[in-house]
Length: 385
Image 1 (cartoon, rainbow, N blue to C red):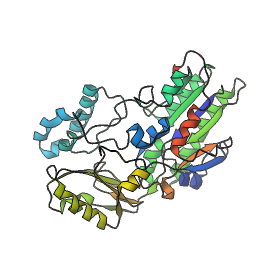
Image 2 (tube, rainbow, N blue to C red):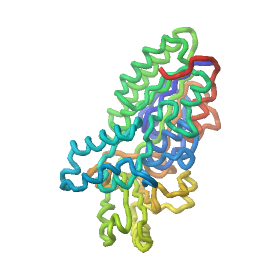
Image 3 (tube, rainbow, N blue to C red):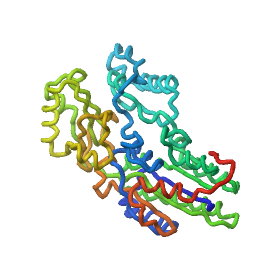
């Protein structure tokens, strides 16, 4: 069983790889990968499970609560003045109290979602995806590695990227650890701040290549050259314009909460229809907006998003690439670059890089699962380090 190193760099899209000549020395074999529509909250579970969102159940972080909402306890906070509800300390209290009450171990943020709306929502990523059981009940790569008795290192999403590579490097001398999975997240945050063309982006990618090369050397010190696979979950698009979609919908004169519920992400809006008469005016408005498109059921099916219970929305409106919803529940302003646009746009594609020949059948991020579990050995003592 070969030692393997998997490096997932969030938002390192194909166009970014080409623009900044990323990993050309260390991993010259490369190709774009089709991604899923949406954000890392849907893409990461797809990579880790090899299944599309309708199968593993994760898409946006906030689906509609079909039963008890984990935020139901916050109902009394709606009595606070609205200005107080958006204060940092109040938001942090809601987040941490909910995390403890619900035993949430996954990535957990509430952003700027209104308090009144939280109580009607569920949260998709309740469990740590980077450990066995995180994608229950079907499971994912870490369940598979444990079943096969494969010892592994996994960094997950928490902590600085430098620390993740350093921790992996410290375990490299242990020959029992056969698989390394490093998840680097800081490129995503950087490009939100400076865009995709900035020199800082290229500098960070070079640091990633240096850290990865050092880890490859450490793993090869025992005389065994490890397999290296570097890949991403999606790309990134520079912002060209922002639009007040909340204001457009409010102008219809419908009553939010009673007629409909709306959730405004940066690049898409999702609506649950509470009264049938509200659907036609909302759908009519969305179809008439030139900077986005209302997705029909056929398109949602093609993207693996046709949830029969419509927990993620009755109507899904997707912005054109480069156009953002601002204000949104992710923040009042527009970042310099964003992801979450249609997978067919060139900027949306992820990337697969390696010094090895690339398997012909790895063309979509869901296919990465076969790389992750394709060389699983046997033996006792499997588990995370």
